Length: 301
Image (cartoon, rainbow, N blue to C red; front, side):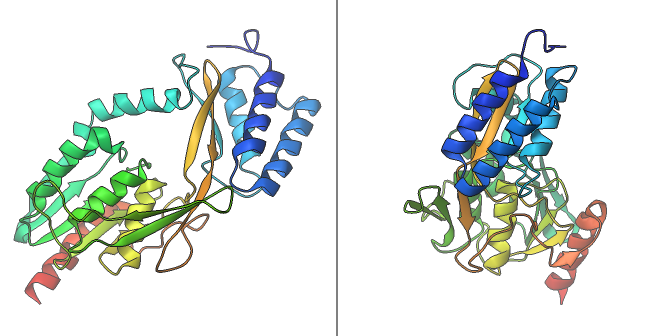
């Protein structure tokens, strides 16, 4: 274990507060959190046994003011590059290589109902377009589709738009990112063309959710729900709507800081703090069977 004989907490806190003050989407909250971290440092709250313990303690304080679950000090077992975002990208690439590119399950159930599991992340589109396009084309012939996001912990908003493009008929405004400066906005739209075949915008579509569903996976569920395109079946999601970036502040520690907030064009808000609320609430473990039953009833009704 890396210990604090190799790391003094003060430089980590100093760099974390600097980045927080410079980049966090809510400047007023950034100031409050920075003051809290400095006070906790002065009190000796971060004089703990190791880097992993420090990450837990600092993350709890980072999230204590407004509950932003994207605001974290993440521990990495293996040393990571000091380049911005390198820690996250290295871990993400390992997950990509061991999950069939983020589509680990494609299955045809009774009645022509397909299941497509997207996990553990919606990987960067430059990696994921080929495997996701292949999987989405494969399920395009199904009579109904269940997209399983129960184990998906987030990812790339561009990949959200890519997946939505297979599930809609027309180019559609999905989301708008509002960045910290208050003036710059970035709209997300589904694509006018996709590689392969679309499932389309009219056949029955269900999205499975659970308390591990987070961030970009929540956006996918929320976008489709707000458009009236899909029914969300399962449990409320974790509630993280702020896109973030990561900075390495120690060879084993990365601070992630949200730099914007998502605004849905239908609801005028997002799922931050509340999670995506299912249309059909049930235990996540039962949601696949429940969605399959709903699909069969609709197809035969």
